[in-house]
Image 1 (cartoon, rainbow, N blue to C red):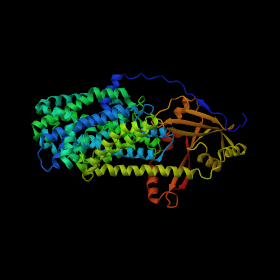
Image 2: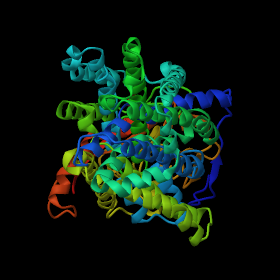
Image 3: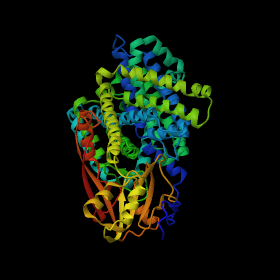
Image 4: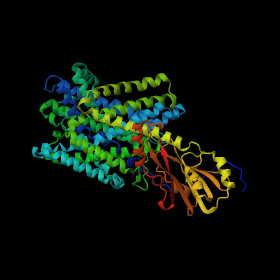
Length: 636
């Protein structure tokens, strides 16, 4: 074949695979109850109790008044209607990125709407992801603690065992993450559905304790409470927000269940059960204010206390499982978008794409959760830390949604403002109310989010600088290929694939191989893996091939940012014979320097992160016996 330089691109279509049997609509609906609503379904354990406790603590008197009870229940009901139902279920679920949801998917939609990547949207995405991790740390701690605190009602003698038992359950929960959720996922929906049914029945049994609680459906009671109680109303509002924590899961889990099942589960089952439970708690407190210590468990007769504690513990484990899984998913998206190092990602299911396990993230989360439980010790103390991360995440979602609605959905600026502004204003009020809790514990998620954002920012900045340094001074690819073709270097049998992040540059491993080994393979492939700003790609056209010369070709393999990038699998599916292929990879030893381009303190963050990243061969699933690493030392 004559050397003609770069010729036309050839799309290689892989073999056709069998299709999985589609899951039924009602199975997806039941599954969404278990995963999507696990977090928000445990909020009745503590939301009303903490809201009224905050109101009485700052009202200047310890007495629980009827206006407080009806007003706070009204605020909770309308928070569920406005924030969860109207914003997330009706509006945000429309913003799907090829079927996927979540903050980083919304960032991608916003960038696509603007026509380019902007620092503003990337920063918002990193802030949102950082705050999500704060939520992922607090949710397991507060959920398990609040469930086990019901043991004190069974017998006060069990009080000293609440924290140790919580730690045991949490450690066990994180320890089994490596097994995956596939084997137990089918139980999540039915158990959580039973939990919601029991909550609804428990509330329904007590509404007649004082039917005046039904007046809480009128939003004027909530507004009147806020107007008449000043600072106490604001502190209570910060705790009211606990009732909608978990709403972000509606959007994050869009790709797992689909829009219609999630909406059907909320409107047809979850919302009615939550409303009945909050109304029942409120009616019971109107009739018996002394039950404020733990109104949720006191809805049930004494013989049912222990079974309810057990059921609540199971429900909180499921809720925790959902948010931990969400942390794995958002970590994978962040790695694919280049704002986190490549950590080892293990798939825990052969059929479900979203079921992954990231050991590094898992153990870091567990360490943070243990510190949180030991430091705060009770769900009431943790309630002060909870909420501010979620409200911040919701504000960011509203900002990005404004861009998507205006530019992507082509709404007029006026209509977009009229629709989004009310949500934005309400969330800002909630954010302000939660900001009052910063001294009592709200500092924790803010500190966590700030630290994680700094790490993401340094990683993104350092990665770009490293790429610039690495490719500095290399000859043009076409010139290097001409030099190799005319070189007298010996030709060795087989195919060498040189992995590089820049398809237009000469791979470092190829340069060093020629310089030190002074040999050239019969066939040489410049292999580039591209992560597209879409969650998943179809198999057709995933691999593209360009013939550069007789001995050189360029292969590009594309993956969506939600996919596990298995390069050998993609190449085999595209028809490549890998029996005589060797993959050449570059390994870089980094050294810190104040004159390199990064401030020295950022060097000391970036270099350990780079060292903690998984091997390229692991990340792209390249077999160890076919990987050849060529090292170089770089000052950054």
